[in-house]
Length: 385
Image (cartoon, rainbow, N blue to C red; front, top):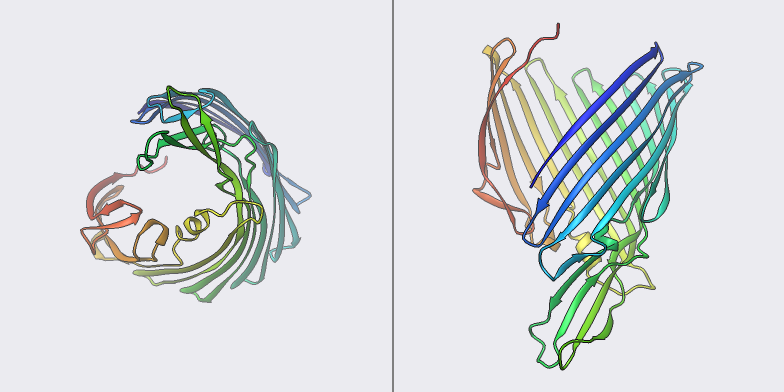
C-alpha cells in the first residue's frame, strides 16, 4: 500500500458572531492485496458558515463536494468488480439551527443533512435535539435522528465466485455472491434520551438510553440456478445476490459515574445493548440476523483511576470487561491497561504503557488475537507565544 495526501484550510472571522471556513484535500492511495488491488484519487472541498441571528438562533450551514475516481485491479478470477473503473461522486449540504427558547435553560436544535450519491440519488437525514437545564446541577436531553448507510461498490458491483469441491462431477457447481443494482440504503431512526446530575462538586453521573429502529439492512436474496456454457459437459452456477432483507430494533443504555478529587479521578462506564432483528417476510431467511445479533456484546464495562502523584508522576490503571460475541466465536473477556507517566520538565512528558495485561493474548473479533503489549512515549509541548 502506498499513497499521500494534501490538506488546506482557510478560516475568516467575519465579526464577533459570524465566521466562515473552507477546507479542501487531495488523497491518493494504491492498494494491492492477494485478491484485489485498487487505485483511488479523491478530491474534496467543504464550506461552512456560522452566524448568530437575533441572539436566539445560532445557525450553521454549508455544502461540499467529493470526486473520487477509482480503478479496480483484478488479480484472481474469483473476485471481481464490474465495472473496474468508477467515478464515485458525492454532493452534500447541511443546515442546523440552535434555538434558545429560555435563556440559559432550554434549547432546541433542528437540522438536516442532504446528500446525493451515485447509487441511490438524494438522501435526507434530519435531526432534532432538545436540551433542558432546570438547575445549574442537572441537565436533561433528548434527540431524534434519521441516518442512512448508502450502498457501496461491494453491494452493487462485487462478484465473488467459488467452486463446490464436494459436489460429484459432472457437472461442476459454482457459487457466486453477486451484486444487486437495486440495493437501497439501509435506514436508522434513532431515539435517545439522557440525564446528567452533579451530585456534589466532585461527583456526577450520566445516564443515557436509546431505541433504534432499522430497516433495509443487508442480507442475501433468493438464490437462482443457471446453466453456464463451458467446455463439455457444462457448469451449474448458483447465484446469491445481496438484498435489503433484515429489519428490527435495538435497545440499550449507559451509566457513567465520575468522581474527582485534588489528586485522583475515578471514571466508570457500564453499557447494555439488546437486539431484536428479523428477516423481512418477503425475503429469504439467512444467517444475517444471528450474525448481526451475535456481533455486538450485550454487556461492556470499564473502570479507570487517574492518579496525580508527587514529583510530576501519573499512574492510570484501567479495567475492561467485554461480553461474548457468539457470531464470531469470541468469549467474554476481562483485561487491564496501565500507564505510568512522568512530567520531568516543563513541556516534556515520559510515559510507559502496558495493554491487555491479564492474558498473553485474547480473541477480540473473530480469529484476530490481540496480544499483550507495551510501549514507551516521550512528548514535547511547546508553549504558545
